[in-house]
Image 1 (cartoon, rainbow, N blue to C red):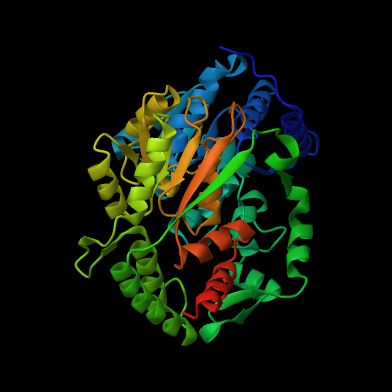
Image 2 (spheres, rainbow, N blue to C red; image 1 turned 60 degrees about the vertical axis):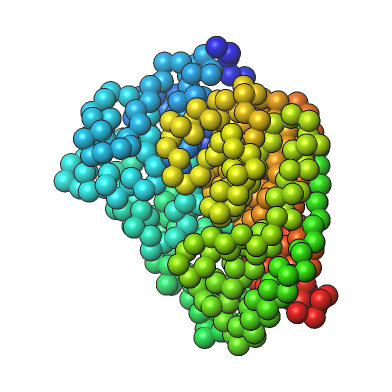
Length: 465
């Protein structure tokens, strides 16, 4: 067991937290630290100090389930000064959760989906926790979500509140409102989301359903929350090996391309009519185009139909070129995993339905170099997990995600502090399809949905779709 010696940037983050909470007596703050900057260890240092000073003993940690099982407990076991800190995982049946809460521990770990249950459980009794830590606070960006409503009811019961994430506003600065409320219960940005929107945004887009920032609003919002947040980027503080991008271009077979073109034209017609790209016919056709570029599609009965093997052939070629080196294969749709397993029968996978212990075992095998290929759905393995310990340095994007947060977070599972060589990102892209627009949007690092629409229009202009 090693002694945790904080890096300079971790000292900076810890000093900021100490000043906010212990010196100034504030309730907490936000650490917006890029993946790999050690949010968990820094937070444990702070929690250990609060406990030693008698300010707070028990802490509720809310984190994605993979992080609950794979990160917090492991960090306590990894570093000698945290060895005495105990964890209890509040997950499973009601009986299991109540038993976990009855255990005397320092950290009580629960996933966001468990918060409504927890709020109901403590509705008529005082909270036993002195501190709340929300790890990956962007999970609470939706003000109207059940989990967010439940957490708001509990906020007054905590003496200290800390939120952690590397991507606080994945879809734009409006995502910050609900997260900042966790810290100050509305002091900075107000107590209601409607007033917040009316103050800083105006309605626009088709049917007036989009909230668009007023001129100067971004700066005003940032100024109002500046005292609550510390932002540190990996680019400024880590000397990481290079992340190499290898775009592998493929061409759709003639028959598949013809069918793809028909569907794509329908998508653009829907967009021209003012349709939205998310909950709409255009959105459904957009997702169908993504699937077709990948080689398959679901029909109206949710049955998968294979269309071509161009991308799968590219995966096979890449795996052959790696000559036995381990690789993560990122996929989006279940039929893509099914086709991967037909070609690579021993390929293991982590996806939404993978249980915590099973995922932990697979991650441990990966870090030991025991897995040749590991297929992953990005949203199931995007936050907090360390996968840089083993020999695997290659990530193959079978179907490139259009979500910048998921893209950056998954790549950061390997390209993070402790990795000892260049990380190679292989992106398999279908030429003259919306793959080009998605790649352009990812490269722009613009998180707004409008950036994807702009990229689609540029792509359309190139090919006259």
